[in-house]
Image (cartoon, rainbow, N blue to C red):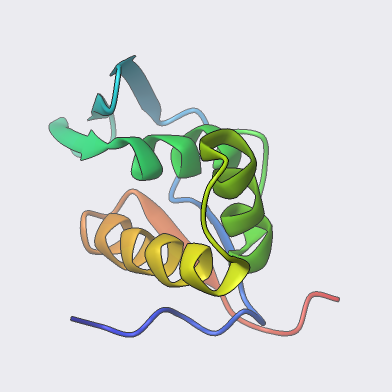
Length: 103
């Protein structure tokens, strides 16, 4: 499995307003309009996508958001899980990594 991405990058939706997301308990269905594909994702991925609908965010920011909503895990654990989900969403073409130092 790929390592989580460095925290010096921002993550964003591949295309603004490109998703339709419907969530039930700990699963969600995401329709990605540019590709015409529908994906079943877990709760963490859905939280990431909901946050990115508001704009680009860092791995640390996304992990903190996931932790606030789920109420569990250390920042290190949350960054690991969030990073893994981001890599998966990137492979699907739903999110993109914007490299560079954005401090």
